[in-house]
Figure (cartoon, rainbow, N blue to C red):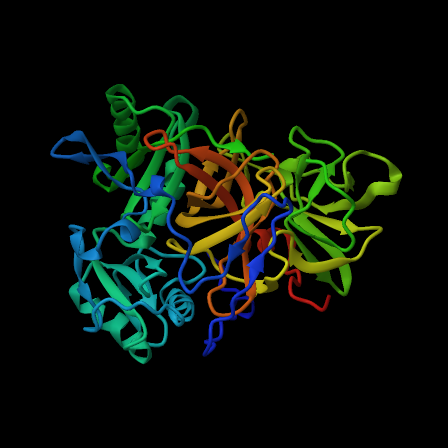
Amino acid sequence: MRLKLVSFLIVYLVVTSLLVATANAPDSNEKNLSIKSKPIDLSPDVCKPINYWIFKNGEWVQKSEPKVWWYCQEPEKTEKFEGFAFENGLLNESSNLHKATLELLNLVEPDELPETVSVKGLFDTKPFSYGGMFINEDRGLIFVYILKDDDKEIIKKAMEKYTGKINVVFLKGKYTLGDLEKWKKLALKLDLKQLGILGIDADEVHNTLTIELTDVTQDKLKALEKELEKIGIPKSAIRVEKRRMIQPASSPTDVFDPLIGGIGIRVGSGFSSTCTLGFTAKINNEDYFVTAAHCGEFGKTGDSVYQPWGFGAWNNVGVVVKNPPLKDENGYLVRESDAMLIKTSSRSIAPKVYGVESWKIEGTTTSVVGLYVCKYGMGSKKVSCGYVTKTDMIVHIKNTNILITDISEVSGMETAPGDSGAAVLVKPYYVPTTRIVGIVHGISADPDTGTTLTYFSEIDGILKELGNVEVAYGG
């Protein structure tokens, strides 16, 4: 669940001229990544049709659509399209989009969603039929699911000051986001192992509860149908997708001083201990950094962390000081984030990420479906980017009994073993700075297209478990 960390969500300032910066890759044969007025072209794979299944007229029906359909086709072509909030046509400028999106999120999403949402400051006593939102940064579009026509006026009123700067696209919703979140929690009572469930999402792109299965057959769908009936989740609200198992993405480097995000580290224990330093931070003016918890052992503190490769005392750069334990819930071991905090012991730190040193970290921001994000990891050894396609997911880690409950999915971002812990960053448009939206958890692939799917722990869950660290500081 998104936290309203308003002090951390200072949005981009509108700058009159576009500042162009270059992200340096470590190898001479790698291409540089330039900051552009628009995102880098979509990976062609994400516009290939993927299969999904819905329950219609008493049976499971297979359909298909592009993974990131709202970037791959005109919004008017979706069957749920109802029109624009402002009659301005499609806009090409997205400088105000992040600010408007966060304001709207803060308006319609309280910390804990009830079955219906009351709109703060407008109609505090009126149930609001909000079903989720997502964005298209290329065109300055915010898509909003609304169940009741009258509630469109609430959104229009809230966004009036952005008339002529962004467009709000209304989609016809069937379920409130509060309903979907309630069913997402209830879905943990399903037999996840027997059904082969990898992920559960209150899906804001489709206004459904999306369940990801390792294998989709009529027998599996019938078994799922029976279990949904037992626990009281309507079959009509379900969208099923096929997904490969999510594998934690858990390379030796030279010594780095100061320590920065994106460099290789090794934790003293753990099944995937060679990982990427995510981001550096200050707490009471002391130096820390964050990486993925599975790079060590969930719940274990006291492990030494090394950089570069090896276990010698000379390259010991810190010790794990905060790594919350897994909680036993309904037979599963649960954490909100896959993150741990390391106190540095021998080197200074800087608020930068290797490969994109010209992007100074200025804070954190919320993961939103449709957001264009980038990362540099020591496994892939390059800057790679993609679009957030799901947020606030519950995911099941491969070959374990572990669930992580605050995860985003990115489509098209190239990721490799060793990238675990890498900072996921908002792609800067108008200023040469960036914001952290999370750290890499694992990788999968779409079985229909082969598109890489990267999963990251969202920054709100990380800060909730590790504490409010300072990620923008002098240095």
